[in-house]
Image 1 (cartoon, rainbow, N blue to C red):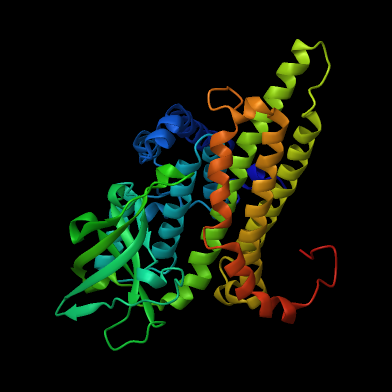
Image 2 (image 1 turned 60 degrees about the vertical axis):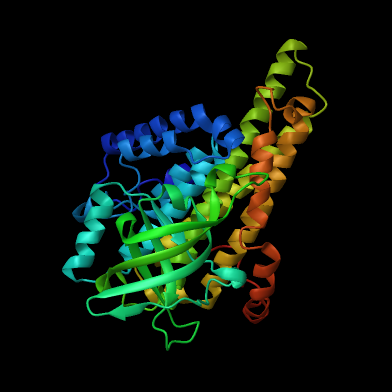
Length: 405
């Protein structure tokens, strides 16, 4: 099943008209993202125009149920948005992926109190953009450990956190953050809290001047927050991390990277066709690389689609989501998708030759190449491979080449 064919499979009452409308809304957002992608990269700025359109098309709340101003769509639908955006603007796609993972966390593990439910409605009705703060201080790479703690004060709570990386934090409408449950809690006893813009202040501590994914604006801040105690989810973050944060994040990151790779392959194919027409059918020297790029992209899309299907089959079963084998597969998906996407873009780059190297060429692959190289260092692949080494040894090898469905 191709990635696009997975769209809307989680929506029971989907009709051809509503699916066409959903795709048209995605196309409208993609058109705006494409128009400003070069400026976003060049100026290293938040893709404000693209997100204004995503809000206008009501695409920021697709994972929320209609009761909260959303559409009750599946992760497959969010993945398709990431894939489509990734073809034209990597930063817009990655921000959408991270936002959607945050929405999944706060909605999948919602508390039933009236205040929290009103918070979810606020997020959906106002089409809020959610950032996250899961990295902290010098040990930011370990998202399963927090230094700052939630401090209770009557009906309110406060949090002061060295948020070393908050992607698009200055542009977000709300922030989802991890923290220790209390000052007495161990670093691994974490909770997840939702803070709205009027609940917190951000003091910038670092800037974002990097090679690629420049529009994500992944700056550092000191986060100072005060809110109602009901805005801290009661369910331990350990459960939220395994059942929502890891699955949705890795699936949507992979969809984003697949989109970036697809955009590069499209440029390579355009280059080869243009040269072939000019040379009366004679293919350029880089044509074999274009074929390799298409082959690699096909494998990447199938990999992501298979992982999405596996997740959707488990989505309503918390224990199935927490299975060691599934968690390992999600971590390896992150590694595999990043490696496939880098290889795919490199093949496209080689297919275009100097036209792909130039920044001013219509078939330039420079921006996609710079952007896709980030995929291997967002949660470093080596760290992941080391962390899952034991579970891979225990798991052995598959018994069958065919999945039983």
